[in-house]
Image 1 (cartoon, rainbow, N blue to C red):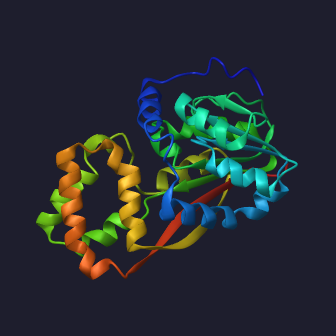
Image 2 (image 1 turned 135 degrees about the vertical axis):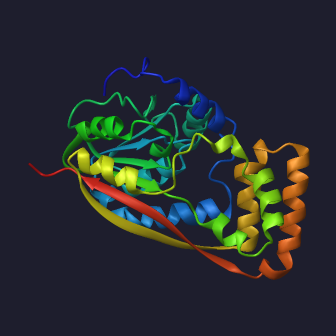
Image 3 (image 1 turned 135 degrees about the horizontal axis):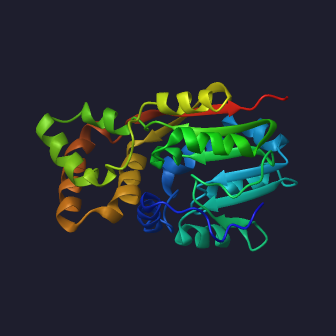
Length: 267
């Protein structure tokens, strides 16, 4: 690893770091995130367990990193994030001995061919130049190593939308999922596939499946989006969720987390 104290910083990266810094203590809490994380870890358990060097890129508060360290206790598992608040939480969850670096995903401070697995959960969506970023990450892979991305949406919003009127949905979406997410790229996985292919990686697709009950969906909305709602938005979101509850309170939602695995050739 090279010196990570002076990573290349982009202005958009600063905004993303500030945004997620507000979620540092709670991100990953609740039924939705617990079940999603378990499904993803199970789907890539073989890759993680056999790796010698792992980087959790955009590690946030270190929840995936904690799971990787359990699966591969002999591996060097490194967390990298651009948010100081997230890294502070990751330090508390993973211990002082866990290597953590503050770094921009677009300029990973990693030497060529050093890493077996680079894992990035909902990180590359925030990167504008995916081709340049993927080439740089591919540079870091050892022969046979892989970049593992989680991409796309949860499908929760699409599922909820089918149970309310257009007017209700517009009110709810405006309150719970407002335009502050405009920095996100399209939810299609094609940009990631294309960037991986142009970086010379061989792509494999896996789906991590999990189930969440209605109470878990409500909890997810509160944990993930509540910190960014003002009181009027929160009141609107709560009212519409309460109107939906009679028909959804006993319902389970089948969720798919899509994984793209880009593997470097052995030679």
